[in-house]
Image 1 (tube, rainbow, N blue to C red):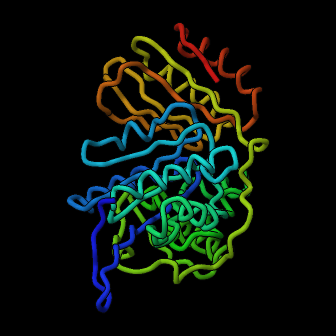
Image 2 (image 1 turned 60 degrees about the vertical axis):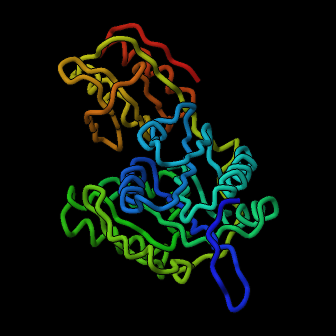
Image 3 (image 1 turned 90 degrees about the horizontal axis):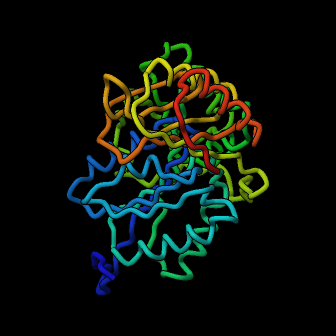
Length: 323
């Protein structure tokens, strides 16, 4: 194992990897904040375990870098029994690199209530190499009030966090930000709270142990095979008109938790496309092999009956839809 050695008295001790878990509901800005963290820690030995609910790893494509070692775990939540063993194995695999920092970006639908139990299982495989520094929950100031009523997952993410970061504060007024703070305090009265605009973040928390803000004891996660939302992948060849793509996502917005992917858009070239709540965000991205998008349904398999006619009406070009 490649690890840094420190001296404690007359004994040489391996330095533990500082482990952070990033949570937050779909579209809260986890990948954006993680990119800022990775940039700030440039030159350090840093690893990433990246978890997405869909079959395709959209965020993994954004994060992938020659300087970062990353393990991707897709098609569910790493806290669910369906992927818990994969998470433990990934932690064991990453332990051999002697990282200074390891960031776990969980799915937006992940309930981290059992994270300490999982870390305990990992230590049985790879030894006591990780020191949990805290769970950081990102809270979308724009969509949080609606999300809190959608799933218990949002409540659990806040209940078990040690640092709550209110994101997208530049898109709302001060009254909304205060209301979000009050909601957080109603769920978790002790966690540290920070604010973030456009992915900015005060990184002073890296110098302290966030576990001092622990509020809730570990418990069974609500993630299960039975409660897993339906996820579909749409793939498309050629260019799409921006107006048609926006109309397609708008037609589905009330039936989706999230949609995200990459499209070649006429007049804009390759673009990253995100639907969060009622906001469609389109920004430039590096060239991809093909256009594809992951859609996470609020209404189960019934979403298929909505996707096909909506695409035909708004885009009208051949596409493929897969589980």
